Image (cartoon, rainbow, N blue to C red):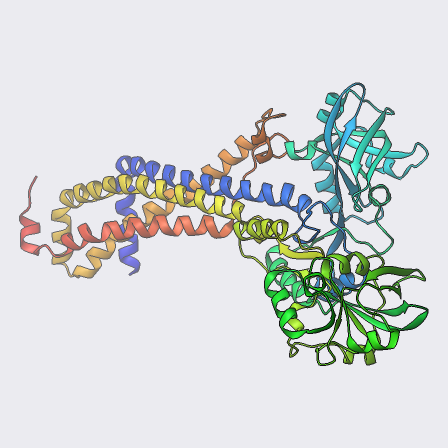
Length: 588
């Protein structure tokens, strides 16, 4: 075998001119494949790391209340954080994703803006500081100025936004917006920093300290906006963490345990929600029969049905008003709700004793304002469970949306959440690989196109390989006869030509790889001005970004060599099978 390898190397060197031209063609094909793959992977990496990471996080928890995607508030921060802390890697960073849409008025000019909160208390790693500086190149001021409250609410905005609104450092900026309670609000901000954004998407928001945005939007102490979880190894952990958070947030039955007063009488009470969709309403109607009241009103959008035992104890009947009070989960405040009774249930109805069933439209208004304390064990044991005929018709603490696998599925879920007009809170947990799977699809499509074009190019090149090999074999026919005459076997002859082609393809593909990295380096030095062009999002600080991977580079090199060797197999086999006598008599 060693002798065959030596002969193959010698023959490769003997045909220098022909092999150099063929090697250049193979090297060019390798360059195209590796360069295109690095560029497409660079695009997806830029979109993920520069845009998706900052707008969505590696894992995102979002909400919708009353069918309003802008109403991003969940009233139980401790519950969320307990689940996240149990499953997220220790190096994870959990950030509040507050985005409040509004209208900003500068010096005689108005524009739509998004008020985005920045956590100035969190500690950044050196890598995160480097990424932050690259994405937000400060021209004037600093993000640290957001901590200075001496001039009201400080704000940092992009250079383009500042020019459009005609504001500069120290100027006042008035904003009008709608808070989380759907209340119209306004505020005056002070410009304390202007930056040059890394891409066009970062020029739209204006940034405030997260506490200022919470205060302006009307978030309570234990209210939490959308959350973003970023980690060092998102490829390894993001989907797994999202799955575990989703499992940990499985909602239970929503219940208000408190006191009820009617006609001067007071007793303990359990208030439950009655879902309003047609299937759930039909289930309630079948299970709960009335002894008093109008069925049409009792099962309407404003329906209130008291259990038989509660009606007897309080002597209340249809048309009476009851007052329900309860303690808040996290503070000393109390909640109060006035309910007009529409019906009294039959004693055989599967309702808990001393309970009232309220249509979810009215129930959720009470349940989240404020969030009631958790009932004790004895109360929870008396609640309906999954075996009860009422279970599917009772309101949960919130609705947990299913996990999705693609951007398309995620969009459908968002539309469903909007159409449902669900009065409670809908919770969605997704990783960026689902919410931004379209980016991966784009990269896959680009790679597929690149591979197809590269293979077409290589097939053209390999036609040259075949022709060159046939010509070489023809020229060396007598040599083949000679080596066969002195004892070389057919397999050795075939192997000799295949090794020659393999060595040529290997050297050429390596040269093409080196050249591809040189071209990447040269192109990445070019500065491209794309200030207001959306294509600027594909750039990093005005430069093209290439992200070659070891796996792709090695795979393309192996593919090139494999195709070349397979192509050489057939002419080499034909040469090896030629009779020795014919080969020795060959003359040109």
